[in-house]
Image (cartoon, rainbow, N blue to C red; front, side, top):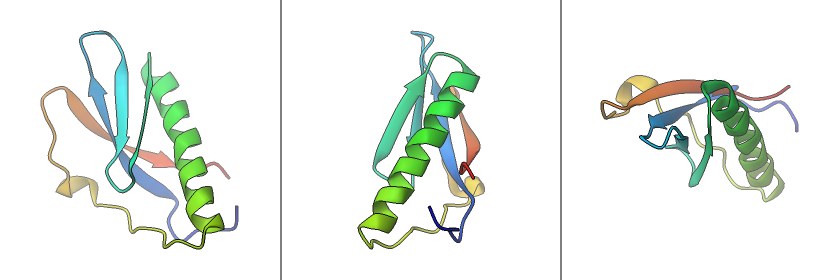
Length: 86
C-alpha cells in the first residue's frame, strides 16, 4: 500500500457480556471482534489495512478520520485509535 494521507482511524471497542469485544470503524462499513484487547486490536489493524487497500485499489476516496471526541459512546465502549501497518 502506498503512503496514505492518514495513519490512524478511530474504532469503537464494545465490551459485551459474552467476553467478546466487538470492534466497529465509524468511518467505514466494517466490523470485527476479538477475545482480548490485544486480539481485538490486531483484528482491527488487519481489517483497517484490508479496507483501505480495497478502497485505494478501487479508486474510491479515502475518508477523513472522525475525531475521537466526536464519537458518542455507551458505558461499555471506548475509542481506540487503530494505526495502519507499515
